[in-house]
Length: 229
Ligand SMILES: NC(=O)c1ccc[n+]([C@@H]2O[C@H](COP(=O)([O-])OP(=O)(O)OC[C@H]3O[C@@H](n4cnc5c(N)ncnc54)[C@H](OP(=O)(O)O)[C@@H]3O)[C@@H](O)[C@H]2O)c1
Image (cartoon, rainbow, N blue to C red; front, side, top):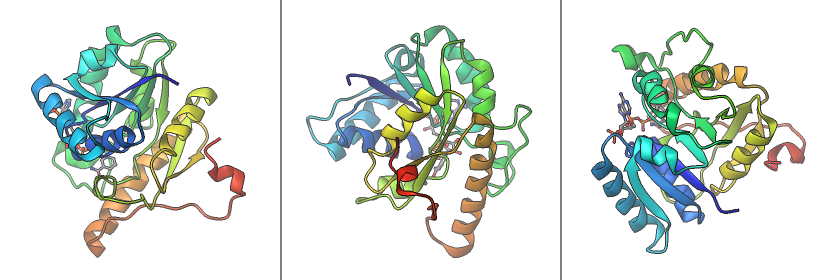
């Protein structure tokens, strides 16, 4: 399938890691940034990692949104509302927004091992309120750390995908499964995003306490649950 994936905030470690992994997998990727020059620089670095044939470009966030079928939000929570409002006129019909944003208390000067209360329940649910109708929101990738994505080799993490749109969830599970080592699971409705976002704060606390790069694996489900379908 020919499609374009825009990773907004792809100049930061999380978005850069995801964009690199998908570029390596042969996807067409646009790195989004507030500054087109920074986006192009990041795209150039991804090409170095993914190979000269990698289909990666860099654009300002609104242009990246207008060029994409699937958008991944990897920006700090403090910029979440403003960016989604900025993007609203730019979405393609039928676009999918994948939200990896975590409302960490660090956004307001607090600890990275704590989350903020979000009125809608989670950052992803906040996104669902801000996108135009016909744009599906999917929560995923909150529990895969940038250090792991940016390291070489397989990613020892499962990705739990939550959405109220079954088709969009399936599309994102297939995309997640393109990252070697990742198993993508259907985590149910978008309201479960609040749990995914809380787990990130726990993982950050574990990383600080034990000096590592933790991730999650789900055990005990039938093989079909891990197949990404
Ligand atoms: N880091 C991780 O391991 C990890 C793991 C799971 C989830 N996450 C979540 O993923 C998101 C990104 O994480 P990160 O560590 O990559 O964050 P980051 O480095 O702080 O930010 C990523 C990018 O977002 C852009 N940005 C910064 N402030 C912004 C604002 N106010 N409005 C719009 N864009 C802004 C910046 O790009 P430009 O300046 O180029 O626009 C920056 O490079 C966060 O919500 C985080 O909680 C991170």
